[in-house]
Amino acid sequence: MEENNKKKLTYVLYTFIIFALFTILVWLGHFSAFQDFITKIEQGSFDLRQTILSKYKKPNKDIVILSVDDATYEYIMDKYGSWPISRKIWSDTIEFIEKAQPKSIIMDLLFVKANLNDIESDKALVETVEKNDNVFLSMNFDNYSDEIRKSPEINDKFKLKIKDGYLEDNPYITFINARTAMPELMDAAKNIGIINVTRDKDGIIRNATPIFKYKNEYYPNLSLLAAMKYLNADSLSIVNNNIILDKKHSIPLDTTQRTILNWYGKSNTYTHIPLWEVIKAQKENNLAFINENFKNKIIYVGTTATSLSDIKSVPVESNMSGVELHATFFNNILDNNFIKKSSLEVDFLISIILCLVVGYLVLKTENVAKTFFFLFSTLILYSIFTLILMQTFNIWVTIIFPFITTITTFILIYCEKYLLKSKDYEQTYKLAVTDGLTQIYNHRYFQEQMIININNYNRYGQVFSIIIMDIDFFKKFNDTYGHQSGDCVLKQVAAILKKNSRTSDVVCRYGGEEMTIILTNTNKKDAEITANKICQAVRNNKFTLANGEKVNVTISVGVATVGENGNTPQEIIEYSDKCLYKAKETGRNRVVAQI
Image (tube, rainbow, N blue to C red; front, side, top):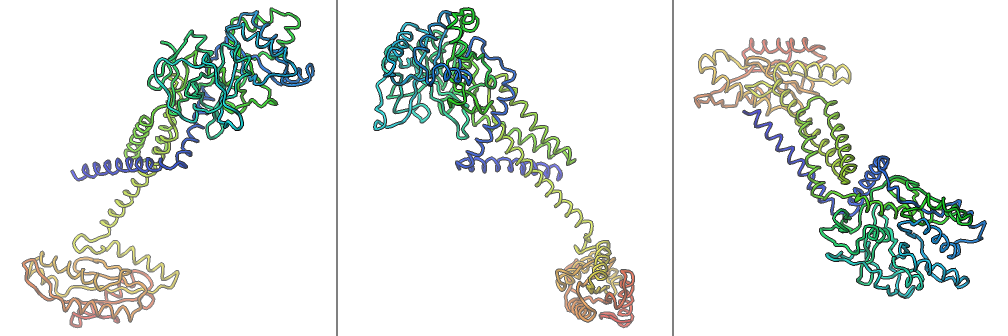
């Protein structure tokens, strides 16, 4: 029964440790430095999982990228002498590609200012954009003051139609200024979307902002706009922090009202067609090339050349072009393939479960190696579980917080367990070396300490003495007053010995009514003084018997000192024993130190 209660108390203690740990972590969560530390490591774990899983994902084969790559940049500089190229070239390129009847041509390029030296080229681009409904242009928002750039008014045709719901203002979606396309393009274009991207604190882009707010109006991300057109969705709804496009397609938003992208791989995941090849095919009127590469395709147009600086760091790669990032967002929309972050409550619940499992295993397992095996197995299995969740259900379950809480719980409970074991060992050892009646050390402990003190004397020259005593006429006393009263006297004599000894001295019951004291760092003279003091203390004490009667008893004492009276435990004990017998033979109630 007592053992069961002890086990229950242990489980309660360990449960308290777990919840105390969580309380501390919640408190630490109020500090931004701690939050940033956890977030940074967790984002790193997300990047690792995305890198692993992206190898098993298949991008949409209908998405191709018309890229201004390094080779194209060299080609343009050689043929035309400058970058950016004439807008007439873009106009001709779009017209040529349109012959393949692509589904969309999405320009991740900004045509901001009119080229006063080439007005005709600008007009050509405007005419091309105006007559092709499947061409999408870009603009971006920022927070420049009107002193730097006057915030423009944007035509209502580019505003996003939201049937239900709204978004709260925050720095990720709300802006006060805009850099639009040149006015003629703004008038001619039917589709213009926003290409802003936002990085996390570590500089990596993991999210896309689907909807932006400018002058209290909502505007779509370029890829969201293109996807809506592709899905024939004229408007959308915002319900329970989800953007609903139709019955099959929705975009989950996180607490920042952005969405977490699911990556399909590193650069060149999508088919890349260099712009210089298209220009060359155009000059040759190579329609077969255009049809082969662009027929019924969704075409993203953008720069991938490192010299043109549109390079981003994303979870799966440190150098990915911005156009591929936008293509990934579009692909996510079509596949309904966004990552959904688990809630804080779920993360806490998982952490508590892991802590309880590991804590239980620590309690049940005595083998140290097995204990660590169970810990690492649990963490590895949980890591695999998070991978499966992300791959199968697109759910991002946190790893770092459960790891920290589980490992910390393991350490605390492990230490507490072995601290309790140590205490149990100490208690067991104490019981093994303590006399049950008198509560002073027993004969076994006396022998151990004699050996230790002899070794110290031999090694360091530390002198010690022992005194051995016997209660006078104790057999007769037991016969007269009974053994219970004899036990009472033994306990009280032991108490007097402890009271009149130093904490460094070792008081023991040698056997029967005999008791000993090992006096550390004590010579013969000082040992004799101590022995006489104890002898007198016993003599002057009134001992209470089992029936309440008070009596006097006396003791006889023998003294021996290492070096003077022997150099081994046996020799010293034998000498003190002879002194004790001499004390008895010469009248008892006295101390003898010499024979």
